[in-house]
Length: 215
Image 1 (cartoon, one colour):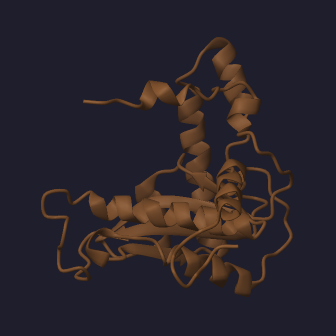
Image 2 (image 1 turned 45 degrees about the vertical axis):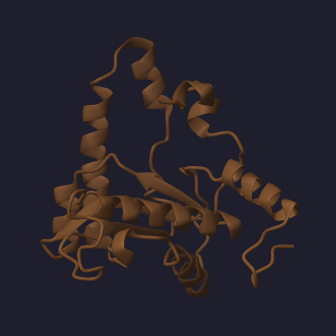
Image 3 (image 1 turned 60 degrees about the vertical axis):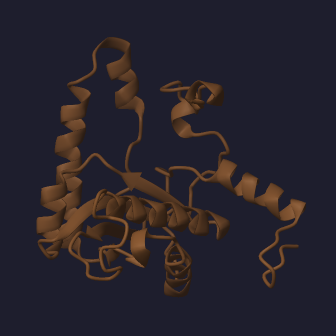
């Protein structure tokens, strides 16, 4: 077992953590079963433990419950998805058509994630030369949320095929909030340790050595 007192972790814990990483999938196929609020809150509490530049915690979670903004997100997804299809030809276009790229209708919980670019928290530490580290911090929190959810048997799907301006307008968020992600959250209809895009032949995983460099 892991020791919470001294920050040391056992080999068994490390193996289980690696297994969690293997099973973290970008879920598109959801059950419609509801998730109780306590579970959603516990997932978000875990995500709040994420590091951030200057301890700024610039992430802003917006749970989208109202049907009107959800409808806007579906509309913008449909437009962007059609545009994306036009960028492919032949067999690749047919394969794109076969992919399920969103769980907007089935997932019971929708959360839009924003970065507050003008946050005063953190007093600007670490972001004067690289202001993009604020958004990087938000992405780190999303990664933590993803793992927290999967550890609880909950799936997360990140939908990037949307128009950020349309989402911001539909949710009426402050002008200095930058859209980062739209997440569908629910119980997976199926479990798989292999990514769907790999299983369907869209893109295989490549050798990690191709991405490691020494200078």
